[in-house]
Image 1 (cartoon, helix red, strand yellow):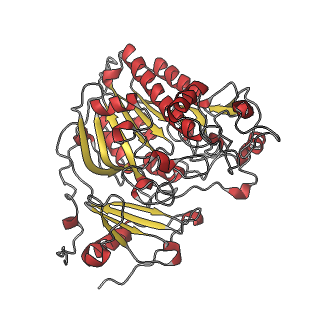
Image 2: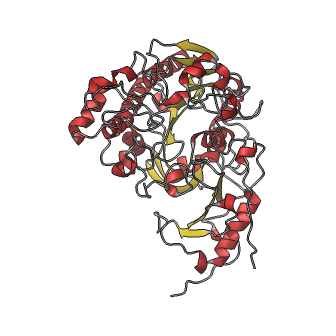
Image 3: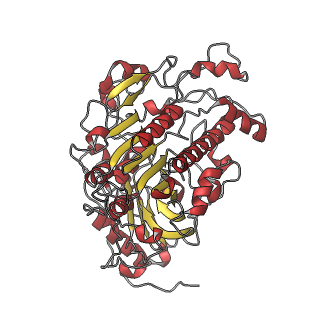
Length: 523
């Protein structure tokens, strides 16, 4: 049966047009006597966690009771998206409020022309090999707007937007305090040789190891002790959590904005032994992975992946308990999400866990793709007992975070591609996007992607670098697995999607991020 046509209008295809009288409930600033009125904000960003990796989003094998409790008492978003399908560009979109057609960083750029950037040992000996492509000096970020609003700012975890010799370190970009990894390649080692305390390396006593190291010759891959060479005294998630507690202790009398950018559950799979044992008991024995490229061997890959997520959940539970003990919980907003969808490599079992549930968890449909599994994220906001528990179908993405934080801080927001979702949190009328836009240049097997979410519609163009202009079109409200292409039945929607793409794309300054889009002739 032929489908009815829709009008050739972007606005008519949205759930609602952006309201001109957008609600923005500016919260009061601190009083002159120093009494706190505005809430603290803790933004927890996981690394490569999928939409379906938490119990409150349908996960059945991994236990996340503390994250689930935050969702039960707060607002759980069902249609919130990352800025990009890999780490650096997604974090750039988050930090700047700009989508990937406007953002400075649009893909991972490891700047391999510098030398042996994939060696931990080489990076240790030469700091110029650390870090990814930087943002421009003076870029306005979440941290700069919150700092200017009077908040004390910190990032503790992973940065990934510039190395130690650049002008794009966290301390250059508005953070009063930073602790963790500047470089996302170094962050693949959970027992690192050092972590940065602000701009200074703090060395550990961890054993020397390098990405891609293997088991010793003759070692039994089924013997747990064969993997001891990849462990040390300083497990980075523990060191990171300790600094989080210290920062909160030191700033409990003033308003603070803290980004906890954990590396969990990104490979290499590494977790405390007791947590791995918990899941070995639950899942049973399994085959080790010790021949894969790039990461360290793992005796129990399924158990370790689950252990990593559950251990972070345990730390989040400790954080909540600590905030309550300090009398800060009711005045602290906690946001939990992930930078992009789950990965596929020799170590992870994305399909077995169904990490992108209910979207497809197959290779090519998660991280590094603009399919739903690559960019639709779990997103939870809790605020003590101040929010009415809800499940929200507001359609938003990382560029919305900056306008939301500006509303929370009661300050004017710089120009962004986002809309504040504070009205949703407060149960008020919520302005909506006309559409969301993504582009992703050629990267690791992908030949360039475009995508638009416009109300119930999701458009996708693959192989853009090859000049492809064939658009796929899905009713994403009924076809979450993107299996029924309706482009031929709705040419007006396709035309509106191409119009949105043309309005959203700007040329990137970095040649690696360039995407030469061929626009079709629309009659």
